[in-house]
Length: 179
Image (tube, rainbow, N blue to C red; front, side, top):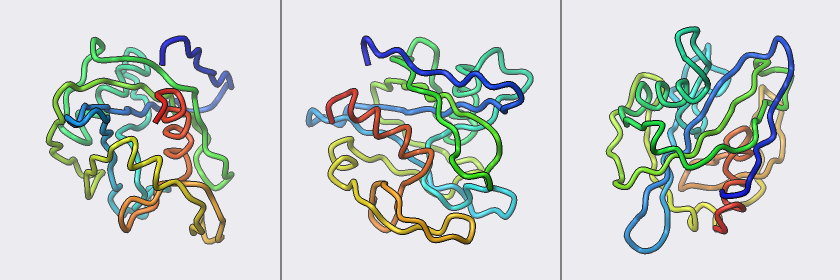
């Protein structure tokens, strides 16, 4: 991550969001990262998808880093601090007009011990996946995106397929860390 200068979205009227990539050592020289399966909800355009902890910036949030820290605690019960921040990735935004007009800023945290998540109502499942397992599972697959079948790049994690915004955060991260 050292030497990476993140690209920033600079558009008026676009909602701000933040996501957290929590990395922990797994004891065998690899890193694990925490993923969530979002709860099934009609009002959530990402309902049921594999995601990173995160969400929209609240007016009380000092900055987007505060958003990432708050959302991680709310969705997983895992407490991360500004001191645990190891870097930031490029801002990402949805590519479909069916999704909200927003961008998400990814923050990467190092957590020395693999935390045991306590899920909030936004998530149904927590998954710890090694970066090497994730990279090895990369493939193209067909997904239902708002009623339209699309073939996209993503990662197969057991019965789950990670794609979209989360894939566009994690693929550059895997490249940066050499996974």
